Amino acid sequence: MKLVEAIWEKRNLGVSVVEVSLDSQDSLEDIGKVYNDLTSKYQYLVFRVPCNRCDLSLQLQKLGCTFIETAITLSYDLKKFRVDEKYKMFCKNCSWELMNDQDLIKLYDEIKSGIFETDRIYLDPYFSLEQAANRYIFWIQDLIKQNLMPHKVIFDGETVGFFVNKPEGKKYKGLLAGVYHKYLKSGLGFLVQYAGLAYEKSQNATYHFGNVSSNNLSVLKVCIELGGTIKDMQYILIKHC
Image (cartoon, rainbow, N blue to C red; front, side, top):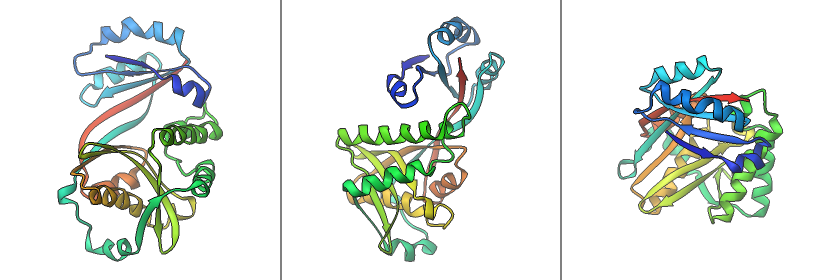
């Protein structure tokens, strides 16, 4: 069991948050030992439960927690990265480049419009849409301070979305990506995923990994179609105290 006090979420959401990552060795008794203490100290609890420990998930629900999503970890072997023939014509007209200040203003406006509609904070009626949006905006601003500037994804001269990926040697971690509101139902969402992977391959990376929520089925399908392999799944349960 690993406990992390998510102090950044106090700024983002206005509540004290702790994230609890359980592992396959944890027992029902282990949860009982810490649960009451956590509910008295924090306003929002987030539990990450291995998918092979349904008993822990059920115990947390008995204690009043709510299941909200499954976090799915996918990986890509970029040496084998290929695009299906049906997508190649679109990919030829797709490019990406680092954002400037005006691009960032546009990105923040898009986030405020609700492009992350499958996000667990966005879906939680306890939080406002403004809180959900600000959480992403603050996160991006933190990434920029770490020299991780978002890339905009361009198709036929129009910006359709963005991605932020973090290099880790020859590997890249997918941190955040999104499709702009105008294109959410256009069928062009796959270009955002494609662009991030193609960029990494152009940087001679060999491996990519990232997470997708079970609430975002359309993106999960695209990730698998582009060659993603499911490596892990965690049940995510929450508790408002």
